[in-house]
Length: 335
Ligand code: SF4
Image (cartoon, rainbow, N blue to C red):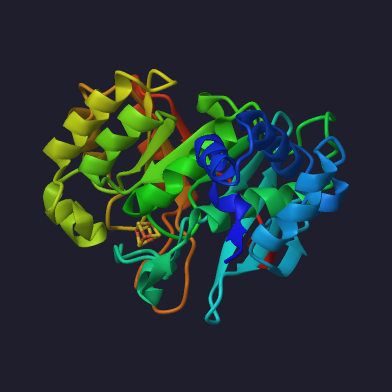
């Protein structure tokens, strides 16, 4: 049966090549062809022995998820939809900024966590993406954005903030993260790869031990009572456990702070008292806050906080000594 080489990190590819009687340096060569040059045709891998080039197509393929659509927004945001079978598509978004290009990658088709304000959560869970489907989004976007091997990096940062809860799919996520960091693949620094989680505490500890990249935590509420409603996984891993996990994470983290994501919901979690309660909650966790204007969708039952409310909320956090940014809304014209 043909294997998909996008499913393997360096260690996995070396083991697979060993099974074929090939030396480890062959795995490194092929890894570079696939990920650094975006090559999927074994015949084009010219520094590999001809006998191996001829043998590989019968055994393996480089098969990223096919592109369903590729839409460019007025502000330069580019949204891809990739087919992951059974009429499911996942989205990947490229966000160009002056000093960086960030790719937002999905980790699951749908999501099981049912956060109250999230349209993905409302759609339900379909399945975990495999490693090839996660890294394949980066592979495809790199090619679509016209990167040149050895040329300037177009995608400088990757955030796992698309569809799904990445840490609910950590077995398939870890090899994809290792490829992002591998100098024979994408060579990104650990500071430039961010996993966003709603707070699956045991998996946060595992990530910290296995592949400690930057961490963002979707907080969205200052108290267990409210967070139980907005982010139901809180009933399993309440705020005290989450804050303790954040402190443990920081021991190995590439940055000396956790980013807390906080969606601003009008009249729900955006009062002055909420901001002050947040300051108390995170008092022992070095952190930054990223306030996110709510993106309305039909029947969500929530509204975006007014801009003045967001400014006031940010001012309270800043006066408490916390670096606070407010996310720009981008790509609105492409949903
Ligand atoms: Fe949505 Fe993320 Fe919550 Fe899943 S974990 S329901 S994708 S906000």
